[in-house]
Structure formats: C-alpha cells, structure tokens
Image (cartoon, rainbow, N blue to C red; front, side, top):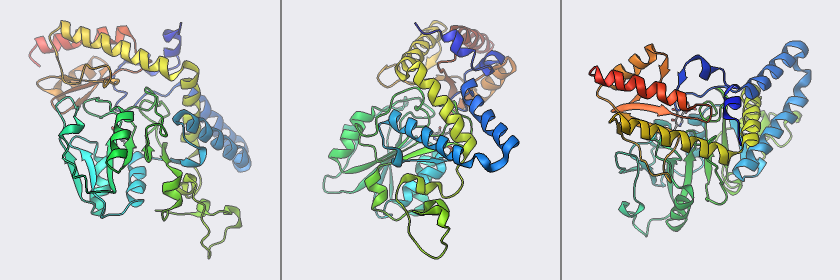
Length: 375
Ligand SMILES: Cc1ncc(COP(=O)(O)O)c(C=O)c1O
C-alpha cells in the first residue's frame, strides 16, 4: 500500500497552494532538489575538480532513462527544451517529405517543420482531442512521410495509444516523432515496442525535474545514417584531443549535446527518475487515474461541462473544464490560491500523484461558487 501522503510531503509546493497546474509547470521533488543542491555544493566548494564524477553521474542518468523508455543509452541526449529537440528532429529528415500532424498540437511540434519548408498537413480532431485513423485520407502510394505529434495533447489532455499509433505509422511508412512532455512521468513509454523514431520531453512538468532539461531519444539507425544537425567539441569521437580542423564525429545521440552538459537539469532528472522508479510508474498511472476519476465525478455533481475525454484508455492527468470566461475564472481561482491554467474555452486542471482528494474538493467547491456567481 503506497503512502501517498508521505510522498506528497516531498513536494512542499502542494502544501503552499492548491496546485493544479502541473500541465503548465510541475513541482520539484525533494529528491530532485537534493541532487541539484549536491551539484551546486560540490561546484561551490571544489570548483571543477568533480568534472569526471559529474560526467559519470550523467551517464548513470542516461542509463536510467534509457531503461525506463526501453531505449539504449547511446540513443539518449540531454537537451534543454523540447523546442530545440523538435528542431533537431526536423533537421534529420528531408524537407520534401510530407509531415502529418494534428490540428491542435503545441506550436513547438509543428513550427520547426513549417519553418524549414516541409509540407505540413494538419489532420482534424474532435473537441476532446480524439481522432479516428480511418478518417485520415492517406494515399497509399505516398511513402516516406513523417507523423509529428504529442503523446498527451496539452490543451485537451487526450492521450494517444502509442502502440496503435506505432502500428499505423509502420503500415503507412510514416516516421513517428513524439513530444511526450505532457505524458512522461505518469504513463509508461516503450519506444521500441511502439516503433518510435524520435521522442522528446521537457522535464519541468510531469517529470518533476525543473527547467533546462529536455531529453531526446533518437533511434540509433536514424542518427547514424544522417548528417548531424549541429556539432561541437563533444560531438567528436575524441573530444579531449580538441582537434579543430578535422571532422570525426560519433553518432551517439549525445553528439547533439555539443558542449558542456546541462548538469543541474540532468541531476534533477536523475533524482526525479529515482523517485518514480521507487514508487513505480504503474502506481503513478493508477493514482492519476483515480484522482482524475474523482475530479470528473465531482464536476458532474456541480453540473460542470468536461471537454476532455472520459475514456480511461485516452484520459491523462489533464482535464479541461468549460467555463464562460476562462481567464477571469483562472484569475479568480488564483486569488483563492488555487492554480489552474486558462486554455481555449475552458480551464485546464492537472492532477499528478502529489495531489490529493482535498485539492479536488477545494477546487470544485470554489468553481461551484464562482460559476453560481456568474463566471
Ligand atoms: C506538449 C508540449 N510540448 C512542449 C512544451 C514546452 O516546450 P519547451 O521545453 O520547448 O518550452 C509544452 C509546454 O507547455 C507542451 O505542452
């Protein structure tokens, strides 16, 4: 039996407010903070003499993440934003290839392709973010296309079935590029089983690792047969030889780290991953489902309209609730120290494993009062 209250105490931010905005930015765990503090203390007290130890720790985090994703360590690079990772992804293909994406994707999923001149087709989705593969009109004779999409959609919370998506992409000869920012840290991901070519996520939301860390997985065959989109001294096979007039790059994903690694973010991620492993991702997933189910019930009881899907197979930690004036409602809630995000025609409520039943009651009670008052 997991003691969720004890785990919650590792996240003091959720005691300081009713924190329902992990989809905007998550809380930093005590485990992640400990690793960041350790790094800054070492640097503060010893300067750079710990460099080798930091590199070794970086490789530990890489192995840990690779095993969580069912990837190889040499397929993982530590970048700082998903936006950067998606730009690298777009540089690994050919601008003549057609890109398919969904109508409601986060801009960083689509803009890097548009910016480079790829033909991009936006496929329609329903208001809850769901879609049916059968409605896509994909001419069978067109090969070599790309599907760039999110695991969990940022504004509706719709979670894709990556296994079905991977099979669909295989049948239609589509490279599969996934932004897992709104799903990693709650739902298990298996890049091999689901035939994912590239997967990127930012660590500051559901992963609980704070800013400036966004790992990217790149299927090894893809990187080893393509020109590196960017290089630096650590892209060289022998970085410490510091040769500046000779090209001899390795093709591990870490070549894309280019220079000194973003240590604080990497170590924070290491702490957060360790905690996720200790709790167990399956337990995290079922806790988020349990809380989200309770939220839906309580919203039904006050007659609120839920825009997100209720289908457990596609639900995530995000629930969109329709309100008349999203921005005003979010601001009025913030005045009561309840934090959600205004998005589209509603407010986005995010529940992670560190939330609890009381958070839901406080929020739904406040929403009922505000909507009764005409908001
Ligand atoms: C789906 C998705 N991807 C990426 C990001 C953030 O990307 P970045 O790390 O480039 O800021 C967000 C932020 O809201 C998001 O919702």
